[in-house]
Each structure stands twice: as C-alpha cells, then as structure tokens.
Image (tube, rainbow, N blue to C red):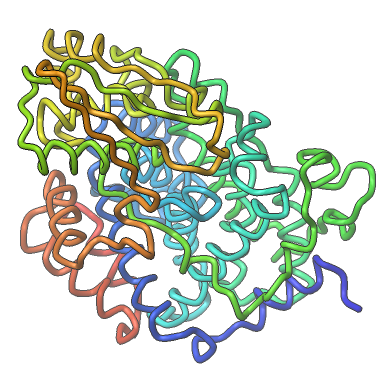
Amino acid sequence: MASTLDQLAAFIAETRYAQLPAPLVEQAKRHLLDTLGASLAGCDSPIWRECLALVQAEGGREQAQIWGSAQQANPRQAAWLNGVAAHIYELDDTGGCDHSGAVVIPALLAALPLATQPVDGPALLVAMVIGYDVGRRVLEACGGYSAHNGAGWHSTASCGVFGAAAAVCSLLQLDRAQCASALGIAASFSGGLWGFIHDGSHTKKLHAARAAEGGVQAALLAQRGISGPSAVFEPRWGGFLQTLAADTQQPQAFTADLGEVWKLARCSIKPYASCRGTHGAIDALGILLQQHDVRVEQIARIVVGVNPFLLEMCGGRELHSLAAAQMSLPYALAARALYDSAELASYEDAKRLHPDVEALLARIELVIDAQQSRDDEPWVRLETEQGVQWQQHVPVPSGAPTNPLTLDALLAKYRSLAARVLPLDQVERLEVVCLELDEVADVREVVGLLAIR
C-alpha cells in the first residue's frame, strides 16, 4: 500500500476539474472573491504599508503582482506581501487550515507567472481546492483545531504551508515525486505560535503570509529536484506529527475519504472583522437585541458562557491594539451593541477607544461553562435594568456552510472592502470574473484587475 505521502502526492498531481462537484466549484469561486476583497482592504493597512516598504528595500525581479498597488515583486515576496494583506483585518475565510484563503490564494497567484503556459479558470480552481484540502487534512491529522491550536501552534501557519505548497504544485503541474518532495520540504518550513494573543502584537498577521511564501518556495525547490524527507508523515523521530502533535495525532485523517470529501466545503466566510471564535456570540447578542428591542442604556449585564479554550483565546479586553481588539470577545459584543455591527468600521480607533465602550465592557462578563467542549459555541444572556433576562445560543454561526451568507451579503462585503482601494468599475469587473472563473481562459485577467492602473 502506498505511503501517506505518496497518496497525497498522487492526489495533488492527478486531481482534475471534472472530479470537482458543481456545488464545490461555486463555493470555491465565492471564497476566491471573498479573499480578494479582504486582501484589497488589507492593502489600506499601516502594517501592510510597512511590509511593502520592506519588500521595496529588498528589491527583486518584478514578476508577480502586488495586489492593490501598481508594483510587482518576485513570486516569494508577492506571496508573502499579499498574504499579509489577506489576513490583516481578520476578514478572510476560516475552517480550513484554519485561514486557508489567505494562505492558498496569495501563493497561487504569486506563482502564476512561473507557469509555462496560460492557466485557465478550471485549473486555478483545481489548485485552490487541492490547497484547501491538503491544509485542512494536515490540521485534522494533528488532532483538529482545538487540540493543535490549544497546544500553542497557530495552524494557519503550521498547517497552511502544506496547503500552499500543494496548490502551487498543482498549478505548475508537478509530478508525483515533486509533489511529495514539496510536502516534505513544507514540513520543515512549518511554524507559527499563538504568543501574540497576550499582548496584541502583529505576528498573527504574518502567519498566513509566511505559510504562503513557504509553500511557493517548497514547490519551486521540489520542481528543481531538491528532495524532501520521504518519511515526514510516518511515526518516526523527526517526523511532522511526532514533533508537532505527538499526543494528539490522528494520522488516518491525512487520507480519509481523499478525493471524496472535499475540505473546502466545510469552510466559512466571515461576516465580522474578528476572530471566528467570537461570531456565535455576536450572532446570539444580535438576535436578543433585535427580538426584544433593547437599547444599550437598558443593558444591566451581558453574561457569556464559554469554554476555557475560548476564554484563553478571546477573553482579552486590551483595545489599544487593533490586533488585540479583533481577538476580543468582549469588544465584539460591545461593538454589536453600540454600533449595530462588528464589521471593519466598528474596529476603527475612534470607535473601539470611545468612552462608551469602556462603560459597556464593565457590564460584559465571561464565565466558564463546564458543560461546553472546546468546539462548542458560547451562549449569551442579556439582563436588563428592569430585571428581565433572556438567553440565546447560536450553535452554527453565520457564514458557515450550513448557515451561509447570502450571495447579496457576500457581494456587499466584497464591494465595501475592495472599493477601499480599487475604482468602482474595476471592483465590478473583478467580481464578474471571479464568479465566472470556470469560463475564464487565462486567469492573468484576475491578477490584472488586482493592480492599481
């Protein structure tokens, strides 16, 4: 029987467009559009501009487009910089490696100039689906999101690099042996820690970028005959699971239902500019406020029942850093109550640092619910000054595949974000091209629409 690595390499090298279910293709196109919208908004970020300055100072061959600009860089630099943009505002999709779109799509479009012939839309969709699939399978083999991230790894980086490498291998049509080497090389590029959670530092914004860059590099090295370890997924000293997930590993997840269960189908599109762990509570509070027509001044207390993992990840109340605020469940609820929204505009300095926020935060309490597992969504109880209280639980947050955003909601999100950087006619054309990608003969058309003219 073929090894795990060989099975994954064959999947990458041999999967074709005809194998993809039609609903999966439609979902992939929406995730592409969503990721590009989030990325274009990210090009308006001060952090991204500093990263751009670093790339400019380094110099390099101008081959791949830097999104939201008139400039180009070499493929590894472009993958990195566009990955920063994609994840900068916490608006990119989730549920894959975790943030698969911000890893896979920057890697793919950065590698596009290296293809020996024009790449059509179906080929790009295949590569994208493969990238999402492999990145998620690596995370599941580590024991899943809660186990792997709970141990301190940020899976977007530690698992995402495999997805990026797989996607680029597919795009460049590497053979089985090259795909296997690329995954082995990617394993040594894996990393990314949750240390940023304690002080609101910026490293989380760099993790998707580093994974995208590493995936491009791994594929290009493998293409040139650089070998990766063949036993990287085997239960041996120095292997990936033995090192990063020794106590939680589930190695069968690498290949379970490979080519039959598509991991992109489980991914979510985020309606809010905050950690996905906050979304169920935002939805629940929104329902309570709307159903009972409660004004902020009538709120005596908001109590949220959470599991210990979510409390550690999203229980912070530091708001001076945007990065910290976007990981804060208390602030997400305050923004929903005060501004009727947890969208990007609610995270601007003037709003999150407003005195009304501090006053409301004092009335928001997070409590441990011993009945919840690590993967359960929190419940929210709203208590009024009049002594009335109501409780709400949303087990599947909005944006999930079983509770999806409508196409209108997705397009409204995309347009509001992309229009921060691009003129309206370009925003509209990019939308059309992405949603009709399966009919596009040369996806360089997509890249051209991401450039400032």
